[in-house]
Image (cartoon, rainbow, N blue to C red; front, side):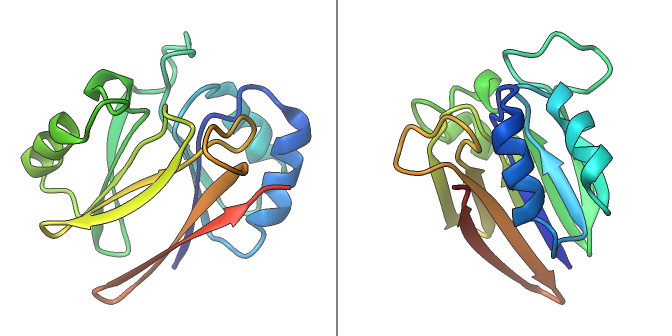
Length: 157
């Protein structure tokens, strides 16, 4: 199963249209907040399921601040990341991942892409789809099959 992960779209319809093209081959789209209302825009043009959490720039109480999803047998913890101080390190997020027994942790907030495997847990930040702070706007794609997880980044140009 192919899962797209997007974060920090910040109401840029221009970039969200580019995201929709980049995720055409995926089955689920996970939005990690800032701005979570963008998930509704993406939902209108996406063929698969859209699941979202809110970030520090979101004021809607319709979306949870974090959630645990089981996708293709993997426990995926979703959060924007600001409540776990991810701009400094991943320690608080690591403890939360262990608490909820996550296989994969998805977070945003930093606007910088990252994926790392640490003690049996994948930590994935797709970067920002519209306001990247590292190099180029990006999203992440997770390919989940059997017991294997492959992660790649896709540049949003």
